[in-house]
Every structure is written in C-alpha cells, then in structure tokens.
Image (cartoon, rainbow, N blue to C red; front, side, top):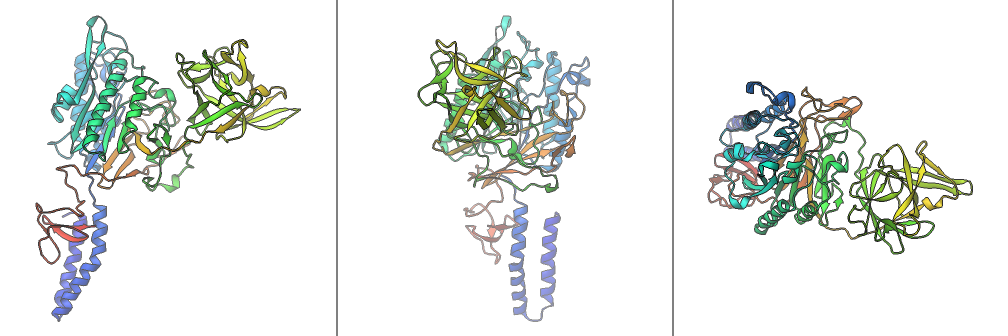
Length: 639
C-alpha cells in the first residue's frame, strides 16, 4: 500500500491495539466508535487530496522541430527538440494523462523530402505514446499549425505532399477511424499538381468528452501567413457543436485550433490572431453560444507577453454571449493561490475593450464615416477602443460605419499623415488634456480612459513609426472630407504641447453603456516548447535549450475544470523578469456531467446497485450519501 494508505492502516492498527487492552467490552466499543469519529476528518482530508480527475489532458504546442534537426541526409540523424522530449518525460513522471493535445507547428520552415517528414512524424508519435501511463491507451490529438505545411515546401506551391497529415498516422491508429460525419475535408489549390485534400476539421470523443478540432486549412496551405480559416470549415464546426449541444446543453466540450482570436489577453499583437474574415466572425458568433465550451490555442509564443508569469489566467480570455471580452474572473471563474509569493509581481488587470462616443470639442461632430472614408458626422456614432497593450497604453480605434467596407474600419495614420481606414489595427495613444489656456494646450499620455475627459488622439505613421500624428476634425480635401487631416506632434516626457489655436485636435470621450450580456466560453493558451524574441530568450528559435518551456495541464472534475500552466525548465528572475516556478491555476466551477464509462471517486448521491458498497456496520447499501463506506473493497469518504 502507498504512503497515504500506510498512514491510515497504522492509525487503525493502533486503535485496535489499544482497544484490546481495554477490560470492558463496552469501553472497547465506545473507544473504537470515538476513533472512527476522530478519523472521519482525517479520511475526508485524505480523500480530498486523493481526488482523481475524470479527465487529465496535457496540452503541448509549437514544438517547431526545425531545419538543423530535420533536414538531415541520414534519416537516423533526425531528432526532435530537446525541450519537447524533456517535457514529455516530466508529464510521464508527474501526471496520469488520459489524452494529449498537440496544438500545431510540430515542424517548421524547411523544404525536406517526404521521407524526412515521415521520420519526424514517427518520432513524435513514439515519444508522445511514452508519456501515457499505459501503452493500451495513447490518444493524441493533432492540430495543424500554419508552419506545418511549410515543411513540405517553403511557402510555395505546388507542394509535394501534405505535411499536415497526422490523421492517417498516428491518430487513426491510436484513437480510431473518423466516421464520415465526424470529418470535414476541403480541397486546396496545389498549382500544376491540381488540388490537395486536407482534413480541415474533425471530432473525436475521448473518455466521454467531445473534442472538436479546426485545422489550418486551404488558406494556410497556400501561405503560412494567411490567418484565415475558411468559412466552410467553420460552418462545419458550427454544425457539429450544435449537434453535440443538442444532446446535452451542459456538456463541457473542448474546441482546439492553432491561431487565436486577435483580442486574446496577453497576445503579442493583434496581427498574431485571426484576420478579420467571414470565417472569423462566424467562429466567434458560434462559440459565444456555448458557455461550457473551452477553446485551446497555440501559435502566439513570441515577445515578453507570451510566457505566463504567475497565473495561468494571464493567458485566459473570457467572452460574453455577444463575443465581447469580459473580466477573466468572477464568482465562478477564479484564480487559485499563487505558489511563490516571494516572486510575486504586481498584476496588471486586463482592460477590456470599451465603446465610446468620440466627438470634436470644437464642432460637437462625431468620429465616423461618410460614403467614402473616415470623416465626422452629425449623428452619434460608436467607436470601439480596443486594448492592444494595457501596460503601455496602446490602443486601436475601430469606427462604426459602412462607408469604408473595402478598406476596413480601423483608424490609421497613412503614409501622408492623414487619417484613413484600414483592415489592420495600428497603435494609437491617448493624451489627456491637463491644461488649456491662452498660453497653449498640454496633454499627458494615459493608459486608462475616462468618460467626459478631453484627449489628443495620436497614432504612429503607418510608413514611419517614428512619426506621430494627432487626428483633427478637419476633412481632406475640405470639399468632401473623405479623410481627416493629421497634425504632426512631438512627445516629450510623456507629454504633448500644442499651440492654443490647435483645438481642432481635441476630442471628448463619452462612454457608451451597454447592457452586459451573459458570460460564455473562454479560451486558453497551450504554452510553447520555445518562446522567442523576448528578454529571457532573445532571438529566434534555435535548437539549444530555451530558458522558459511551458505546457498547459487540464484537469476535469465533477464540479470544476482546472487549468494549470506548468514550467518545464527554468523559473525565478531571469534577465530582470520573474517567472514563478508554480503558477496559480485557473478554475472554472461548473457541473460536469460524468461521461458514461468514466469512473472517479465522485460517488455522492448515486445509485450503486452495480457496486459492492457497505457502511461501517457491514450492511450493504444501495445509495451513497455523506459518510464513510467500503466500495469494491476500497475505503472511501463520500461528501
């Protein structure tokens, strides 16, 4: 018996020993009864500690087995990234996983023969299988990443083979064959070779839990940098989720893909997320219907915001049923305790996007669109101020209106310094007016916006980021006002000074209060086998061991789902940045319907006709409530 069982048996042995020494049988009976009562709290504490998850899922992403490892003349020389191998060894040592999810980019950036790629795939399959507690069950789900196709051909077509194929091997062998209704294929243009069929989305059930996967499909196949999921593949996901939730609206379902939404918390920059497209809009609208859905993603592992410092929730994003980002924590979604208080850093609470009426202080007209481009208008118009980096006060302005559908709705300081509209987000800053009199106007840079305050709104020039322009209320050209004139400004010590006459650059902000929609799904980053371009690990992704290696563990219990990002290399303060060794978990409390065939220790209030269950008096029972029982020969405390 293990240590905990040994302690329990020793305690019972001592109770029996002292009971035998008692002269009076009644005293003997009372002593044992008191001992059982005293032991109740002990057993309960032990059972809580020993609580077993209904499902333990290991999530590993962005392995990036790359050039020097895979472009080898001898197949026997091909190797996997060392951080990946060590992470799998730690998971084998510390966890009893039921399933594993590989979040994409198993390989990257090299043109290699198909034999080399198949060798890499075989090595990945062998290593991941070894991480499971039993060789009898080794289900590993593979998500296709944007770089996976590049290994077949350096971002050019035609491609000689499908380097994103992890279904025919090893998934088909390790999990099972996909039925026609659980797989969606789409054809990608493959130049003179015609088309190539790609598994764009699929659905598996593992241990009773549904996993729906959206692969990087035909658009990524043609270009690794085209972050657009096809509308057809997203529609298939939408239909599949509707089918799953029609059976049971309270199910916890896992949805995984490689590229996140561009408004994800702690994202390096919005451009690392999905590009705005019909597929992206449909996907967010679809997921927002399902509060019990958990979205898992990879891809974004560059820069200092990528690695998780103290809390798993740093890279968790919650959405409401309208698809808007909401607070990460509430009464049902909480942070667990931080394990390394001596390494605690000041938390910067994520600032959510907000909607504003932005009006010229001089004319009272609102920022908006005319039939051609960015302009001002008489009627109140909503501008969404999206947070790009809350710590640095970097925002992006998305202006309501349909006058610039061809270009997009984000405000941009174009090459000429004039303000126009674009599909991509550009860094924008707010300077709050602190002084305005006949001697001039002074405004100070802020990271938080206040309703009713007046600001100078400044953006980096799209062509030359060293140049800054403030948007004014003047149209260009004045005859039809199809853009807004920019005013060149200089920032000194976080302040801007304008001439007293330059009031055309002053804008008043009034927050638009909207009814809060009900909370819905959340997304979480899966971690990375190699963070890059950051203070701790400068540069690109060489093969040598990185300082920070992280992977996400997901534990599903009957009343909650716990996510815990785990460090699998260094921790502490490195190059002035502190990363805790033990990161606080993120806990989502919910009713998890125990899937058929999955047995755990959560036995409260269940029928036990099929179990051999007895109470402490030795009587067989048919129903378990609170108390101590012997179930199938094992002592358990049910609460």
